[in-house]
Image (cartoon, rainbow, N blue to C red):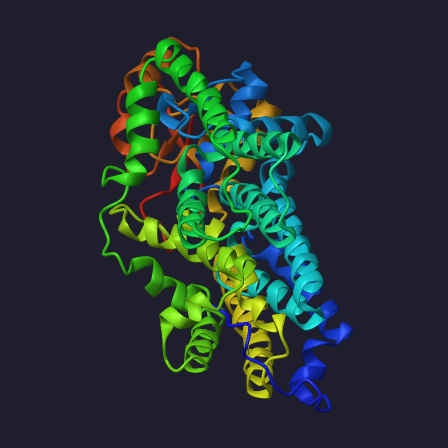
Length: 496
């Protein structure tokens, strides 16, 4: 919550903090560092964490089986995400023939686009210092670098939500009425968001729209509400896809509708957490920017005789929208029992814009000092976080299954083996071995003894029990390196 009247110091000569925030050299440093962090934070690349294998397997199924509308997930379940991002990955693979690129580029490109949009919007609205602050807040934290190259939909969803929020902000700032073209653009963006991650997009926008409309209900202000049809039409199109899945795909209702979509608003997917869960984690994962927001808010309230109500009333319509946009979704999502930190990532870009909005009027010198200190501290914090994460990943052999799968494929190609992977909980192993489905242990034994298989990939824990029933089978010396984070998720190759 930023106050228009927090001013002073505009005519003074630039001190160290003002010079740093307006320095093009610092802007280039943060930009290059952001690019490096986005590119490297998840090295060594693998699919064993954060449900990446579900997203990857969906696009793999499109290419291998032509399942364009409804994809599969590990253990022959229905994919629990809508198909837009898998479509994009499938198209990228057709062009590049690289699955690593096809899977990770959508999130990476969305992260770069968000960085550019934040920099341009904050600079145009609040000045170059604000642009640097917005870019730093988005790229130098514990959340953005990790999600920028994960095989997930959080970053693309955040991009679409941010574009919608900017469209509404532009209408409020320019006091332009909603026209037919604007509504069609909103419909297209909402449809894209729904086909990226489902109805959760409404949770990030509708509370803010409702709060804004209520605040300015008796004023002659062009509001955030575009009318009903873009929202309802996009939802109707998405519901047609859902109904088609329920009718044509066994298990779609239970796995997708109940578990994935409705499970986000209950406790079926994650265990319940207290309402302060997201705020508490933002204080650490979004540090030092969450703390900087608190400092700015306190300064704004103090300038209005310690009255929060008066400070809110003094906000201009565009700043009130940014505040509602950043905090409205946070309030709603905090009331949902099932919580996971990456679920609220679409709120990070408007929070960054809220950080930058302090420069709408010349801030006092101590706010420049706090902002510059936050930029410098964030460089150290984000750099240390990514460096430690990458170092730990290589030291702990986070890509052990990737390496093992590549070696199995090479041996199978050299020896012309027919091979399968016995059913397990590691969906990523399917993709490392270029498979779409596991084989049940009973069927593996039958196919092996019938001479239809030359090799089997099986968990080390299950191998002694399985090999007893396999005629002429031996344990190969090829097995995955034991990982410290997952000591029981190791695999071995069984051959004849």
